[in-house]
Length: 472
Image (cartoon, rainbow, N blue to C red):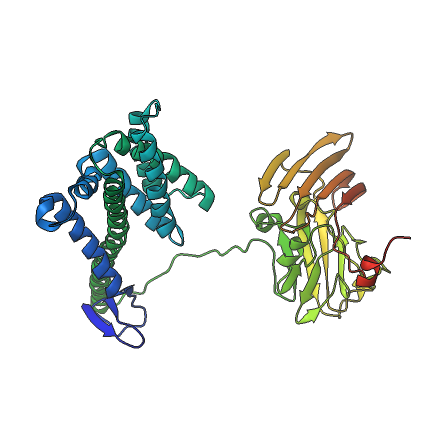
């Protein structure tokens, strides 16, 4: 069923709602498409104006206006290469949204005017026609692939091709016409073509939404009819034969070993595909625990669990293979937990417990605890390099080999991150680990050496008086 309604609360809005036939069921779904009629009227008007300018002679629609202006207005409409490129710029601007909707068209006509002056001055520029052809191909690819760049790059791309389009316009200006009138004409025509592209993009989105909604409704109707038929056949068969139905055996296997939010284990299968930007986020696999950072890299994360502010680790015990990480005394108080030495790819599992009833954990575990276990033997060698915004780079290599009766595991990591600060964080970190382990059935031993070194511009809190004081 299709319904149309009008809502006039603050402004007029048209809603097209596509509903399944049986609207009384709770599992029904609907598709809502919302648009303002003012915008729709503007888009239709732009398309209508463009169609009239292409089909009706200039004296009919622009009676009494200077003929130079008319020639300039019709020039962009007579070449398909210019026509398609300018419409494509409008469509691409509509896809980018935001300030691009008006920034790209204004950039195009501004730089196109400069190119027109260069063409009118007969300045020699090579490969102009190739650039005109290439512009149509480039913008078509951008639209089809929905490619986006930064605002600055978008403007530079549009400005580059706009200059060549303006250059062609300028070359064809007759010496007897008014340069100002002619330029004003093709600038207005170009803006109309950009507007037509924007309107086309918006109208196509509305049309597609109606077709998609109709398709969804048809599929739901077919599925509903099929389910009804199947139910009827099943009931009839049971009524006639009165036979019992034996279901197949279903085996449910739980992976990860997480028993409950109170206590459990997180395995490598869950850690492998988890995005981790800081090593402290490994502890966020504990249900309800939050690790955050308020002053850049290098400093220990701040933790929260079950409504408690754990500061930088107080009252939450963190261990690496049973070795405590919490420092007994620190300028931030007891329990300072700096996990920046962790290499997430080496973590085999994490066992957690919450509450103060676990006597074996001892100090710093009044709220909870986590024991991080490293691999003794890696499934495969690992080599990674990644980069990102704010000058972030990370390189890591790890592996393991058989050595005698045991396994030798080694790994190294280097991280650089400048951060989104006015004064760069300039954070540089090196981590390394070397472990030798031997296992015999249910027993075994290991010896592990870890090293970490980091340097950064810290955001220390110092008195303003000390900053303003003159040096002795």
